[in-house]
Length: 328
Image 1 (cartoon, rainbow, N blue to C red):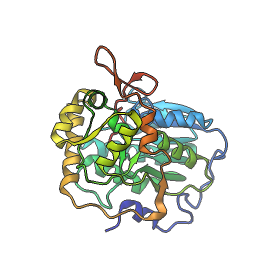
Image 2: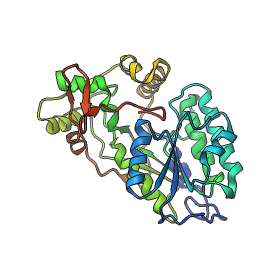
Image 3: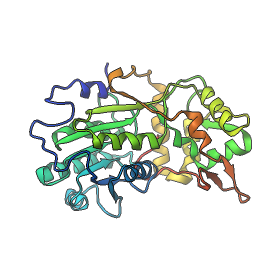
Image 4: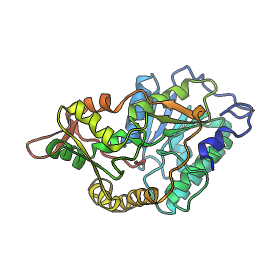
């Protein structure tokens, strides 16, 4: 069974990601006005920062600026944007499918008058078919139908986990105080880890390309949990060991940060992944190398706590927390 990424990349078209009648309203090499969903959340803020660094004008979108159950609201929020970067909210119930359908309705309605380029970050490697979980199925739906709704569409996301998942406040405290890196993956299970800044740069690159790839996965070299812990240990200068968390315990730990409902949904995704067979590797042709390794990324973080017990990372701000646009 192939992945959705493989299915999309093999679909016949006149180009990998551009419809036959496509005539983008703005040159990809020029500065674009880019509407970014979830631009104040963890994923979206990294993407927005990298887009600004690339010279683009970012129009931040969140639940205060648009209603993902109302296509007219989405049309108004996009305004004169040349391009859109989509991350769906961290919603696990049937509303997730409604959000995807609303976006497709809005983009189809805008047609030639709206954004000519859309980049969708599903926040995960997608399965080849819907799996009966709205959180996943909404992303499968949007990835499949997006090329028919806009002139130029690309899907780009991590092949595995975000490194920023390790920066939950409780996780930073555990590394700093106990030398433990805890996550709901077995210590011997290999996984790809990607820094969000690398994803932001990949999105910016897609917006510059005349004929961007229809689908891509950003991937670092697969590392086991023990190897990730060793890389973090080398960066922080102290012993760090990997601790395999039960998904239910992980859900309990992240609930104060993202809310009970979202935490239960995240835990269920990890439960399902643990009970499922490992997916086949994606086609090599859709993989993009994530340039930032675990050790380099970890060295940028402070992995420290203040006197009051608050976790700090990076330049000293509060540890990153997942925003409304997705996780994992």
